[in-house]
Each structure stands twice: as C-alpha cells, then as structure tokens.
Length: 607
Image (cartoon, rainbow, N blue to C red):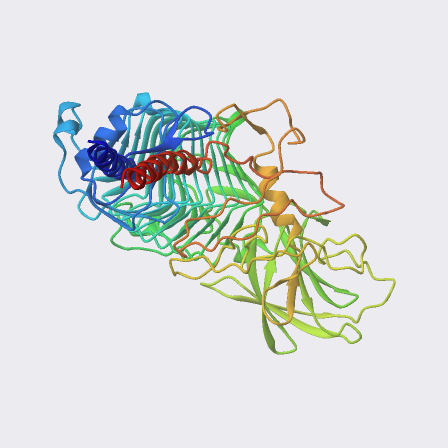
C-alpha cells in the first residue's frame, strides 16, 4: 500500500514536469514577461505565427505594450495597429507585405493594401528596425491620424508609395533608408509639426519626398537622389516650414515649390547635378533646375520664402528658376557655382545675391572660404569642390563655408577652379606663399587659433558627419561616410585634403535648436532659442542591414567660434531588457525534485 503511494507521488511529479513544459512553450510564442517599460508588457513575435495570429496579439494588447519581432523573415504581412504599441526588431526582420487586404482591413473601410496601418488610436507608437518590402502593395507604412508616432531605423521599399502620413501632428520619420517606390517614397498630407530627418531617399518613380498642406515642419539632413521626378515636391499650402541641410541631386529638379508659401525657410541645402528630362510632365524646359517655382507658387512680399546660404551647382538647366507667369522677386544670398553673374545661370525672372569663393595661403596649406560682401560666411551648405593646384586635381569638402588643402605653404601655387557645367568658366589665380602676417583664418578650418586645423568629432566623406553617417555623392544605395570617433580626428576629402568636422555636429544641433521635446519625445516648439535646455545626443544609428552606415554617437564638437548647440534628444520609448523569470522556474523544479527525493527515500524504507 505504501509503495503504491510512492508510485502516485512519482507519477504526480512526471505530470507536473510535463505541464511546466507546456506552459513554457506557450509563453515562448506569446507573452514573455512583464518589463520595466513605462506602460506595458513585452511580447515576442516569431515567424511561425500567421498574420491573423499576430493581428490577434495586437488587438488583445494594452496601450504601451512592446512587440519584439525576432525572426528573419515574415511573409504575407498586413497589420493594423489600433493601440499605442512599440513594434521593434533588433534582427532587421524582413516584412514581406501581403498583396491583398485582410478581412479586418475591409471591415474598417480601408481600400488600399499595406504592410503596417496605424490608426488614430495608435498615436504615440514606434516602428523601428524593420526591412519592409512591399512589392505588390499600395503602401508599406500608413499613418492615418496617428500623431506622436515615430518611424525610425527602417529600410522601406518597393510599394506604390512607400510611406503615407496624413492628418497628423508631431510625427518623426528619421534615420530610414526609403527607396524604389513606383511613385513617391515619403508622401505627407495635411500635417503639422512633422520631422523628416536624416533619411536616405532614392530611386523612386516620382518624388523622393512629396508634401501637401504642411505647416510648422522640419525637413533636414536628408540625402535625396536619383528620383525620376523631383527630389522634394511641395504642393498646396506650405506655412512656416524649415527645409535645411539636405543634399538633393540627380533628380529631375532638386526642390519644386508649387504651393502657397508663407514664412518658409530653405537654408543650407546642396542642390546639384539635377538633370533635364524632355519627357517630363512639367515640360522639358521646366526640368534640370536646382530650385524650381511652379505655376501654383504664391506668396506675399512680407512673407516670401527665405532661400539663403544654399549651394546651387552643376544643374543642367538653371540653378534657380521662376515660373514665367510669376513676378520677379529676389532670393537671399547663395553660392551659384561662380563668382560672377554671367556664369551663375539664374533665371532672368529671379534676382539673386551671389556669394563668392576665394583662396588664401595658411600655415600648412591653402584655405578656401565662401564670402558675403567681403566677410566670411560661417553657416552654409556642405558640398565638394574640385580644384587644381599646380596641375594636380583635388576634391575638397566645404563645410560651413570653409575648406582646406594640406600642401607646402612655403612656396606659391597656381590654383584653378572650374565654375559651371554648360558653359564652364575656368578661374586661375596665384596663391602666394604663406607668411606669418597673412590672415590665417581666411578659408581655413575653424580651429581655436589661425594656425590650427579645426577640432571636431571626426568627419564623414562628402559632407558627412563624424557623429553620424556621412552623405555621399554616389548614386549607390548606401551612404559611405567615414565615421570618426576621436574628438580631434580630421576628415579626408582625399589623401591630401582636410576639413573641420566639429561644425557638422553643431549644425545638426542648430537646425533643431528651436525645437524642444515633449513627454513623448516628439519635437515641439520650445521657448529656448539656443537649445541649451535640451539634452546632447549623437546621431541615431540606422538600420543594422548595412544599407545605411551608422556612426558612433558623440557630443557636438568644441568649436570656440559658434554657440553651444545640441543634438536631437534620444527617444526614451524603447523596450527595456526583458526581466529574468528563470528563478521562478528553478524554484518550481527544485520543489518537484524535492518531492521526488522524499518519495524515493520513503520507498527505500518500505523496501
């Protein structure tokens, strides 16, 4: 009889162990554990789950919950986000978007196919770390009235329109590689205070970025190239927006402003190598421009767009062109690839103030400087300038109006620069050898003294940044900036050229100095005009696929001649590491083993 009791205990142990195994298996696919995340729980999503099963997890979640996608590939995905959720992948998971609508989408009246659809109830969500391929879908990602939402560190491609954002405010689209849409890559409609920052947008059938009815927004530090229509197209209403530090090249036009524009600013952009297209819907003569004003452009004299300190260069038609039906008006000071009006190729319907480039001898080379009315310009677009010194070709990075070529300064040099493309203008001059009485600061990198090259936090090639990913002039899908981590490292235009890179980080801070962060870490207007109340942070890393090279984070450079500025504040709404629940399982197993040992000893006593 006692032996039977021991057998019962043993069987009970086996049953408990089997039940524990079943519970742990279910947990692996669904809820993992409570986390320290501010509002909710964390879940793991694996590729063995169907789209309907993942949708069910979303529907049963609570606001603030986090979903970690841990598998490499997910097929036939079309998910509606109807709550504030954090959708993350540290594996750069590939999402292959479904080509048809789910019954759930049809029931909500959604008529276009999509990968992720964020509704009004999803405001405050995050989508980060994915490779979303939407080959047969209308959209890869849709934000429909989903405000305070962040799309960051993703690769998004091949939809009809890759990203649609409409009827929203306080949205961030940053650090993404968005490419190969049949039409537009980033399409925004009826928006207030959107941030489109540090994205690479290329190889699209129409525009890289298209806006309609946009106010109080910032489009900055994007690389936009090789699009079949315009790099950036702005339609309908455009009020109080800031479009700055973008590199826009090899499109039909660089920036196309075809809107009622009041108080807009277009500052420090590089618009170059945009090409003519005789088959364009605009007409061939309305293409190949750096900046183009369309038929619907309207403004008033008191609130004309401020178009200043841009580099408009090497464009096949005009550097800047007005519509012939519009009145003549004046642009701000810009560099038009020439020191004289004859070779600037500005439309006769525009007046312009021409910034000039000059050279000087400094202690260890030749300095290059952009000037306005004889005074050096310190806030300016970033671009590469090709020059010839004593018959040898150099490519020099111009950052904030300054460039530098390291060369023997104890002798004079013959410098030649080519201005323009259609009708080249070759300017030659002799740069005399350096003497201590020379003005060392002209054209040199901005160091703490005239004889020093500026200190910074590293630099990327071709107008990149040391603290982030460098921009390039190539037409490949990746940025090839060289990351610098040393606070005193010098950037290289080639083996013999140098430029200061501390200004790159500083300028990124200056662009957003008038923006603060609210509790959701979304950009909003701040009373601080210097950014001193904001936290310093290096540039966010891009997706881990390698399509965007990410740099090491660093604080802004130690420039002595410019005000203290800061980077974007970090996004705090990221999942914390999962809490370790293994101790509970260990205790449970230990308890069951104890019962087994006790039963075994009793069995021996009876034997």
